[in-house]
Image (cartoon, rainbow over all chains, first blue to last red; front, top):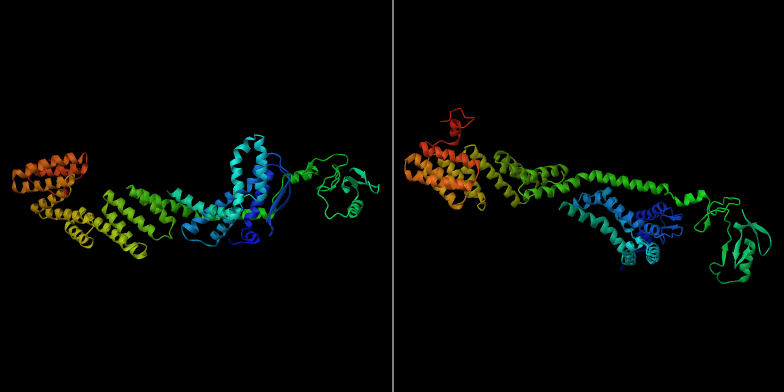
Length: 179
Length: 352
């Protein structure tokens, strides 16, 4: 397997890192969780981070952890879909369309929760399930999926996810919608 | 602000300036000296911490006097700092970048909207054509061609569907016009292969034959039908159009023997077709009118009965039957135009 340095990927996909951290901040704000420090982008590991106060309730923990997944995924699809039809379907791509596809895929690539997010959520979910928290019980499959997905980042699943969401999903959606 | 005493030097300091070092409260110089004296390779975690003052905000340093402040992330926070921490704001450049992305996305969506429209109209047109609804197919393809002017074969499909819709409605002139445009455009654009262009040309010729027959230019129709058969021998309509045009030419020339022969050939190819059946009856009625031979009359009546059953409520059959019966009754052969003039509403003559 080719090893591509993290900083290079961070440069190539930096919009996704910024959106990821901004989504954490937005969900912290939504749940009134104090944010102590934010780094939206740096060219070292981790490429961005949000330090917030310890969260005791599972709902806040869950939302703050999966917030970037929801926001980045939605933005990826919304940005890629209009550009995709021009570039892929009608082969009339121009700089704006290619820029938007790059933006969308970059954002999609950083949708996955980080190691820290996955670990936080995993432990919080385990504790909440023991307390028979209903949301934790319902969300547990999602938490497991996120945890596994995070492990599979080693095999670039996060980047594949960005491409699949930004380029694969519009293709399928357009084909399905057109019948 | 609260004050406390350094357990080493005995001086008083604000609590926020004191440290707990191995469970002793010390000022900063004494804490440094204590740690230096211990000469540890590494200070254990939690061995040193700030004493802290719950009356002084740990974030902005505001002294609240005797009032104890709530803790945010383990650090005392004044109401303003707590508000700021719990309602973090995105930096201006992040907001501006986000706004720019949304604007670009909006612009892309707006300018590509026609692509989405065209993308969905094309399969809609093909589905409608497959279901035989060429009117709808033409309408959808017209929209698609308008939305996607970059695709050269869409107007060709549009005109082809318009031609088919007109054919079905029996508007052969319009059909020929549609096929002609499609065929010419297909030749110019190079978007269609020879097979497709040939198919368009065949439809064009079929529409023209029908149009000529409708205008009673039967000799021209026969010539065109023969040309169709010559150029495209495998076209299934070639023989039937030659037959139809031949019947019309024979009728015009009062060659009722040929008329009967051709009509019987047509009927043999499709014995359950009410038009073919009534056409033989028509030929026999002409022969009866010409010769007075009763067997022609008898067979014509039998075939008319059969055609009536096959046709159901078909109005065109009823119109045809009326003229055939007139011939059998009066032994006078009138073409449709003359019959309409004499007997039908809109004609100048009076019905007898």
